[in-house]
Structures are given as C-alpha cells and as structure tokens.
Length: 162
Length: 162
DNA sequence: ACACATCCGTTGAGAGCTCAACAATGGGCT
DNA sequence: AGCCCATTGTTGAGCTCTCAACGGATGTGT
Image 1 (tube, each protein chain N blue to C red):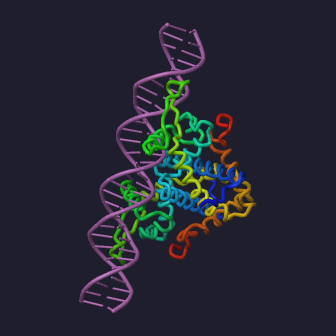
Image 2: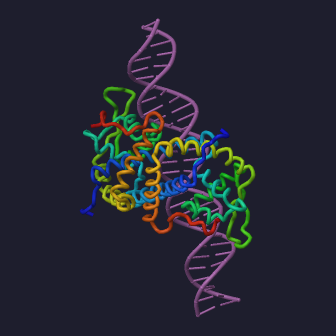
Image 3: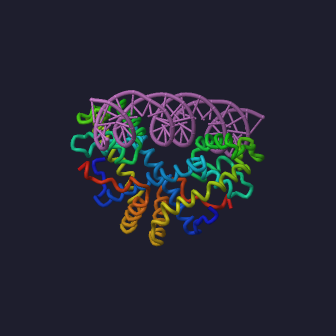
C-alpha cells in the first residue's frame, strides 16, 4: 500500500470541483422536487420508468436492476409510493414469488405535474450552463466511467423494456 | 408552464448516462470507505478539511459552509465523530456562541489509514478511465455548473483557511 | 441602556437508505 | 419424486440527512 498513486495537483482541483458540483446539483434538484411535488428524486425516477412501460407496470426485480437500486430500497420505496396512492402492488401471474409495481392514474398525474418543474431545473442548472461541445464530452465521460464500474451496471439495455 | 423547454433526444441520453454514472460512482466510493475504514464519505471529507488546517481545528459554522453542509447535518456528524474519538468539541474563545471541531491524533491516524484506499478507488473508477483532455473538460464543466448554482456555493475560497 | 433582529449551534422527529436475516418459490440434478 | 441451492421480495434495526423549532449570544439602532 506504500506505493499509492496520489492525485496530481491538477487532478485534485478537478476532483474537488467535481465533487462539490455533484453535491450541490443533487441537493438543488432534490430540493426542487421535494418542495414543489413532494417526492424525492429517487421516487420520481421510479415513476418515470413505470410510465414509459407499455402497461405502466414492471417486476420489482427488473425495476430495481434497471436503476441500480437494491431490492430492499425499492421495496421500501414502493411501500411509500403505495401509501401516496401513486403505485399499486399486484401479484405476478407467471411467478408466484414475484410482485408487479403498477403506476396508478393518480401516480401518472402526479408525475405529469412534477415533470415540467424538474426538467426546467435540469435545464437551468446544467444544460444551459454548458456549450454543446461540453455536453458531448460529458456524455462521453459518463459512458466511459460507467463501463469501468463494477460488474452489473453498464447502461441499462432496452431489450426487456422496449 | 405550458412552454416548458423539454430536453432533446441527445440531451436526454447524456442526462440519463450522467445520472446513472453519478449514482454508481457515489455508491462505490461510499461503499469502499464504509467497508474498509468504517466511515461514510461525508465524514471522511470533514476529517480531510480539518487535517488541512494549521491547528487541525475549525469553527463549526465555517466547516459547514466550506462544504455546503447544513449546520444541523454537521452537528450530528461531529457528534458521531466524537463518539468514534476522531474529533473533539472545544469552546470558541472569541465567541461564546461558537464551537470548534478539533481533529484528534486518533482521528488523524484514521484518516491517514483511510486515504490510500480512497484515492486508489477514485483513480481507478474515474481518472484512469478518462483521457487528459476529458479530465480537463470535466473540470471546466464542474466550474461552469457551480457558478450557475444558487447564491452561496461558488468554489470555496481559500482566504479564511489558508 | 434597551429592545430587536440576527447568528450560532443543538435537538428531536421523520424520511430514506443499507445491511443482514428471513419465508416462499423456482429450477436443476440425480 | 426428492434434494439442494439460487432467486424473489419483504422486514426490522441502525445510520445519516432534512426540517422546524429552540435557547443562548451578538450587535445594531435609538
């Protein structure tokens, strides 16, 4: 461990700026959604995925895997979404172990109400601040980093969902 | 609100990749620290800031502001760090309202032990995956986004700490 | 001096997440 | 069939964060 490759001064600066930016961006987007639509960002993402599904429903396990979330986390989240009336659980017809998460009409309406504010925030905080070239490179970077991350999580494929 | 400027297809792709990358990166770095050194990333950051201070101590308020953390969050965190024996609270001599967070020798040792693993993880997961040009642009992007974020949080200046 | 607004740090309740343990089902192997 | 192990989803405890409220100190204006 004595031969740790420390970061150069330049890398440290980038890392520091990157981490600070990440934290602040997350904070502000999460706060916007929580304040205006009363849902945390992670729940918003769940609703989005369900809404893009043909039947507005999906196996719990698939839903979790698609978003790099643990089963436990998703189960807790869906319980909470159920209390809000935005999602319902249904038994999976083909696998007695399984559950389906189903987006309700109320849930779809809540999502539709939340989306404009969220998208506007993303645009103002992120895309409006960057040149097209920077946006392009940001995409490259994201994909490059994702490919190097542990086993599972490359970009979620669309085979099962589309 | 009817005239929301939605994201283009390209922007959606970048956003999706970016968010996924962010989540996975955070997850893995946090897990590494938690697993190998038994501290969450946010606590690690607190120790780092304190260790870079001349006296290894800082006002609670300044420490919170420097990292974009709420006072409440920092107070809870320092309480926890105190239980671990890594930090101590001391009264501020010039302001009877204030408290100083002081890094203990044990805390410094814990930080020194945690640093190599963390830096290695950052290098492997992030910098080793990127070209020098991508690193440069990532820095640009981070600064650009930071400058556009709400009032307080530009890059923390070094006037008060250095 | 005195009142008033502001700032500092803490506290407690509640929400979301992680982790380990668990019951129930499925699927492969003999 | 029966056995073994993997998979699915849930649960409860513990931790961190947020939010609102608070008591104490500061300093500002009159």
